[in-house]
Image 1: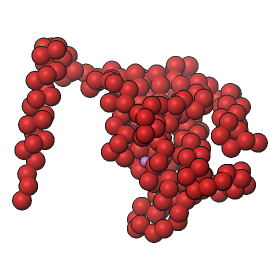
Image 2: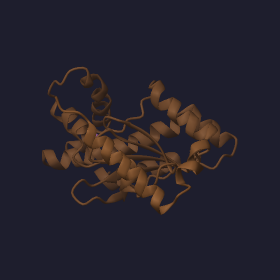
Image 3: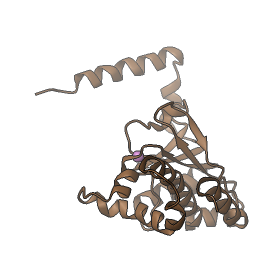
Length: 216
Ligand code: CO
């Protein structure tokens, strides 16, 4: 039976190297965190939140699930958002999708994978919402990439629609919601130009971002 000693050894080396660079690092973090960002990303092992944006422990509050979804009734995601916005007072919520997302591809291909099919149904809803425009996109890979992008935009709108964000804006709290997409092949993030910091501009920004991807 294999054990996890190699991981525990790596942990010791990691903690030692951080302490070497900054002897007080863990002491400072021990009592409080004050991240400026909430990251909502995919669970995919190739999309590690902190590493991609080169942030240390303490800088990023993170929620991840399959295909970076923000489902209106998901108490887990909503609780993370509520704590991040109301208590930690993050200034930015970043929904980060990625190209080649297995969840998005599975939802397009429609093969059965078990319980997760019910989760992926939300992405199929996104596809169906824009079906006419998606049908003009040629090729499976191309369709998959566009759906990865459009899914991020829809999830940004889901974040914007939550009572958590609406109430923060009602009390004039500074909070911007962003949509990014990450390339597995080059490690680079693209901004999908869907940053929203108040409800009045949301629909216009949403329409423009969608047009950039799917045309009119
Ligand atoms: Co994914």
